[in-house]
Amino acid sequence: MLVIYLMVATLVAVVLAPYVLVTVPSGYVGVLWKRFGGGTVLNPARLKDEGMRFVLPWNKLFLYDLRLQSVTDTYNAISRDGISLTATINTRFRLKRDSVPQLHQSIGPEYVQALIIPEIGNRMREVISEYTAEDVYSTKRTEIQDKIRKRAESMLGEKMMEGGVSEEEEENVPYRVPLYAMLNLIDTLILGIELPPAVVTAINRKIEQYYISEEYKFRVAREIRESERKKIEAEGISEFQRIVSKGISDSYVRWRGIEATLQLAQSPNSKIVIVGNSKDGLPVILGNMDTPAAPSAPPPSSPEPAPKERTTAASPSPALEAMPADTLSKPVEKTPATQPTEAPHVSYSLPSSLSELEALLGQLAGAKPAAPPEAAPTDAGTKPAPAEQKH
Image (cartoon, rainbow, N blue to C red; front, top):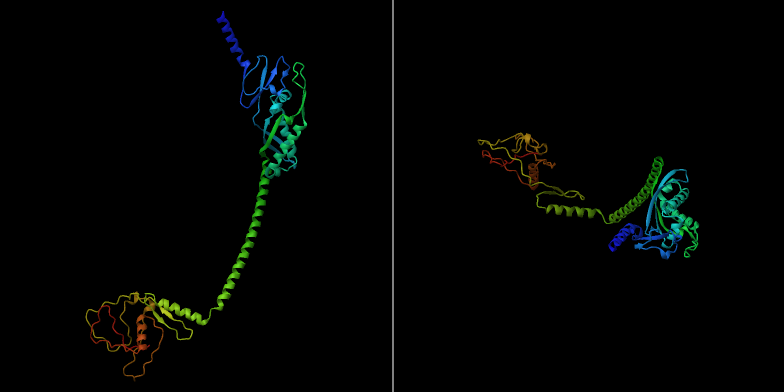
């Protein structure tokens, strides 16, 4: 019989366990409702905290979340300028523990759909009707969501919830609690604003033109600064020229020219320096003297006597087709020997080739050109001395 009783008791315990043992999760609180004890227990001290709780099978325990909760919903509204828009708002709130029994008795577990969502939607429509569509869409979003939260708190504080007295439970005293005392509204966040596409395009175009106008302002300011910079630079250059021009004279310029000539003359490459004959004449330097001469014509196979008299005299040179025009020597006429001897007249014209320049320098130095050999053959690469020429 004992075993039978134990088996029956175990079966009854297994069947009644879900109705007798209730687990209160973390962050929740349980409100006890007594079927034969006056209904909801309004005393905050008798709330069921976290953990395993024993409840009579004919009573019920309702659980409420005391942690931060978030609810998101979409609302329709009309702006001040008559534009219909849609706003998505996220509301964050938290229940107050001591007012959970009154909340359970006055509103019930569906307090989010019954209290929070309608109240936030009503306040949102009221606030958005004070702003234009452009303000809602661009610059006034933070201000709008702050106003929605403050007005919702104000309206929750004005609405009162009242409760009765149970004759069986002396602890259940009458109450008159505002809705604001039942929950703490943290904030209301506007997640998105949807306007008609034509309105959005117009707003974006207007904002674009505004920033283009601001860009031109910065451009004008930049050009003003640039003109000031150029003016200061021009003044500096003018002052520099004025100061430097005081120390520059003709003698200083000649001295600098002589110094430049000396520095060029000390360079390793060979050159000819011709000093000007006037007072202000500066030296002229002719360079490229180390350039190898053009290859001379091959010597004749058999030696021939040099002619005694020629109408034109020219030094052996390579083929005329291979020489530049400016290096060709000019033909010179020979005076016949039968004419009376005249004093030679030398003209100091500008030489056109290196050989003429050497002949001119030799005449200036008083040297006489050597007579050409009668029958001696010319060596390879050696130029015969030119006959007496008249320039």
